[in-house]
Image 1 (cartoon, rainbow, N blue to C red):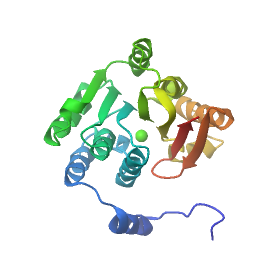
Image 2: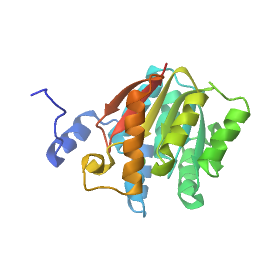
Image 3: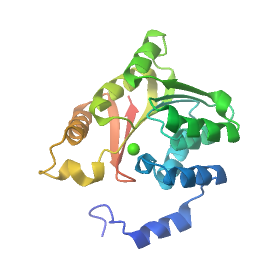
Image 4: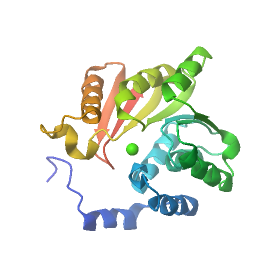
Length: 220
Ligand code: CA
């Protein structure tokens, strides 16, 4: 029974949500609005948001760094968990998607706690390092273009404090990572990151098969 992770079919997934999801009303609203948009598949699943909120609470996170904000669900989930002391730095390129994020952050009363950077995230992260923010963050979430994943993870390592937590999304890429026939650039980039993290002794890691696969890595 416990040899491997259980397969979650639709019925079991519904059960998981019914019996364990405590989604704040505002996140449910945001999820519903995003579901009607193009690119809706980029939103994290609600149980993943709940896991990230729990992790933020566990490590007493106060500063959250996000690479790939989309319509703001993950940032809002973490901001709500961090409470009034929490601050988020969010990187994205889309004015349209983050306009939705801003609207919900405002509605939730957290908009003053978010610094949103609409610029290539590698540049934003490099500027943060140059500005002396090394070790300043407790929690970082990487969920953006896959070809830059290793670059993002490297910069997050610099920006996280020792003991800080990195979460990397889509590390199973809908199963393509294990499909020998899949050879596109995104799949190759995710495989390369997964392989690199396994060998990288600077992190304690666990690949959690939630959503589309979430690697958790604690900076040693
Ligand atoms: Ca994602």
